[in-house]
Each structure stands twice: as structure tokens, then as C-alpha cells.
Image (cartoon, rainbow, N blue to C red; front, side, top):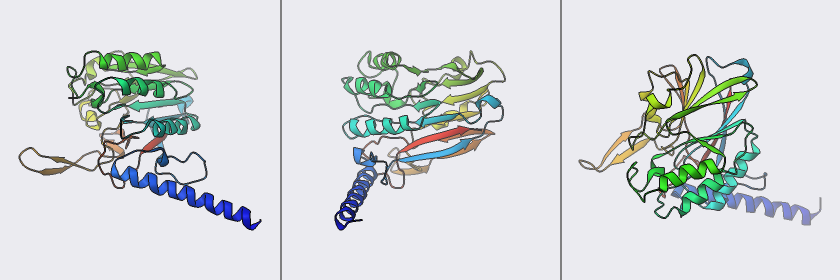
Length: 296
């Protein structure tokens, strides 16, 4: 190897390492730039592609080994760049998913609807063998996170835009995904914080003794699903933060029961994804995440 070639390679490694450090620094401060995702395929990256098994008791043999890719909390906004999220989608598409699940908060504050339009087109570019399925998060409802807040029609624009771009948005409803003649049932809940969490409606059409995965943006939703036939719940919302700070009655702090990763809750699996986007708040040791769950 010539000295010139070796020098060029070293410069390339230094550049990729510099990009990683820049993406990590900006991500820790609460901002998401394209530097968080390595597009060369040879360098370190701030975003984490996390792979693990999801073991379900009643899973049919024909569904074993299927790959579910889970992403959450894109938060497209001024501080989460479209270029960054585009690279995240490219990374998802490289994973050859059987199913892709999204668990809410596709935008942050979006009074005009501009970011909603961009978000649904971006999500529409996600590829999988058996479809892309989504639920809503609190930010998707409007500025005050309410079913009655924000400019009239913005939530409907998001819902319609998802459908137009080939995404199955489940708002308190269910669908059966048929793979090799067997069904995996997906149930999407409305958001817990905004009062749109309606499990009676969501599970109404789910047959007994089926394999069911629920999509609930807020992981605390699993605490209200005790009477329903669900084996696993996919969530986001927390951005990996272990603690919640509150100003009510003075500055107080409490620990979250569920903040990130896999939990066993009364015999059911709960997975809390740390999300891809950020809200402009410092977050240490909570890298953006794409989760690959292999059904077992």
C-alpha cells in the first residue's frame, strides 16, 4: 500500500470519526442532524440499531423468525432535520423488515401543517414485506396535545396523509397481518394523555386466542390493558429519560416506571423505544434508536 493511499484512508477514518463525534454531541444536546447516521457503511454512528428477540407464548410456527422493525418519535421540526430522518428511513429500509411499526409523535409543534405533510411523505417511503403500521402520539393531536386543540383539520390531515402514502394508521382499531397463511394481529391505541385511549373499541374485532401486538405511544398504556388479549406492547414517548421533572407544587422529580428497553409486565412484554427525534432537551446516554425485533 502506497503512502498516499494510506494517508487517504487515515483521512477518511478521521472524517468519519469527526462526523460521529459531531452527531453524538448534537444528539446529546437535543438536536438531530444527518451526522448522527453514517451513510458510508464503514463508520460509527450515534443512532443505534438494536436487535433482540421478542418471545411470544402463542406465536404460530409460521411466524417465527419474522422481523419487526420498530421506530418512534420522529419529531420532525426545526431541530430535527429532514435530512437526518431521511437517512434514518434509508437505514430502516436496509433492514429488510417483514413489518414496520411506528408508535407516534411524527411532528412536534406544527401550527401550519407543514411538517405533517413532510412527515407523511417521508414515512410513506418506508419499505417492508407486509406493510407499515402506526399509532398516534400526543404531539400529533396539536399544540396542546388535545383531541380538541390546534387548527381544525390538522389531525385529520395527518390521518388522511398516512393512508394516502400507504401507511396503516390504527387509531383505536385493529388489523390482521397475514403471513404464510397465519395472522399476526396489530392493535393501535389512541394517545393516553389526550384522552383518546379506547381499548374497548380497539380490541372489539380481535378474535380470541390470536397473537396480538399492541401499539401504544405512552408505555403506561399497558397498565390499562389487563382485560385484553395482548401478548406484547410497543411504545415510545420517553426518549429514554428515566426521570420526570415537574413544577407543580415546586420543582419535583420522580422516576418513570418504564423508560427504555424490554419489560415484563404481568406476563406481557413491553418494549419502549427511545425514539429517533428530540425535543431540544439535553439527553445523555440515550441514543436515537431503531429496534429490530425477531419473533420467537
